[in-house]
View (cartoon, rainbow, N blue to C red):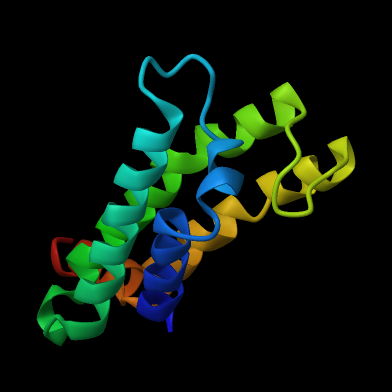
Length: 128
């Protein structure tokens, strides 16, 4: 499910939602916002495809990579809030603020769905 979610969101970056995603590119990033959106879309499609196709043994590592991706794009959500840019129906400060609290949920989903969290806890117990 996580892989499908990422692949779908990534395709949105590359097609119909491209302009919406540009509202999340922080103004302090010294790159063209369209380039940032396309690059992050390619990464998202790639992560989604690999999550769907990779052998189970690779899933924990992919979970950490996916969680890192969700952390890496979080400044874009903060920038959208701070610059008060409307996108994705987030047309109020309250809506943009509430969205910020969902990014940790995505990080947790990546770690849980891939078994990364359990693998890490198991390795800690084994090293005691």
